[in-house]
Length: 363
Image (cartoon, rainbow, N blue to C red; front, side, top):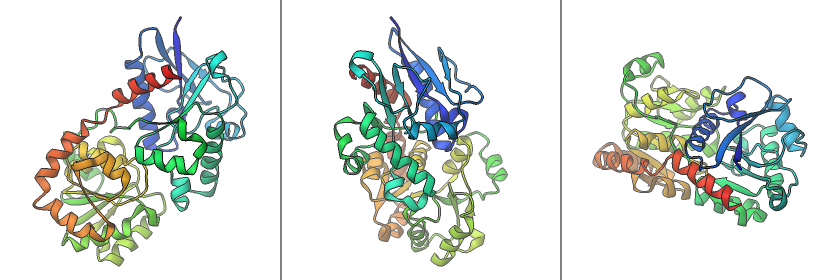
């Protein structure tokens, strides 16, 4: 008898986040590639175009678009989903009462960040309410909740104590095939970016840490350009103001939003240094990408960064960013490049998929 793992693929039909969409695709491809003998992978999708994923044995097409589906599942209404093994690469899942033992029905969800609790100002009010409501449903009905780090597992256990025994740690990775492209110069030109710069990421929210990031860049004596990735829509003026307040002229600040993977790889591969200033317990998407390209990284000294980056990055408190950046641009640059490449090999979607298959087998 074949065991089918059905993966919720809403992010491939109607993405709300580029990172979540890339993670969903990479994980699904890895689950297909690592399926044990006698097992296969199917998809659950909202109304919309079919996702282009080779190897799925079936697609369960639901009648609602993603937005309406998210509202329905938030209220515990999940008609037409059916029973079986269900895995969601996000928090969106049909979390309803079920019988795992007698009906072999299990639901596993994933949390990549805790912004709705640690930094609600970084999200809209409806987003905060939705995440908090879905976590309450997960407390009641999820058979397991996957998080990418032990640091996040500890934080989540404090937020949702009833989940403590069901939290599992399975790390993420850089996007599939993430590497510095051969057309770096052309991509930088198309992005209207200079050839030499330091890079960071975030928006105007205090929890993103851009204010101390800019102060640290100035304190390190860097007088070149600064590229800021992942700036939310509408926040560019506020980010430029933060830079100016720290002493970085507007002409040297290049603020960009969500870029596609090879553009991000071009930025990382060209950066003299990447600064990850947020102290939140989020999975550090950009820092992991930076070490994958062998870029020297300076990161806020947080449990998540210490766990994920280990000795591949220089960690410092926000007040110490200046000295750490100066060192990463100078005497420690080559050492950090070597350690970055070594550490990046620890993260793989294939190894994550193998652990997910093991988790569902244990359940």
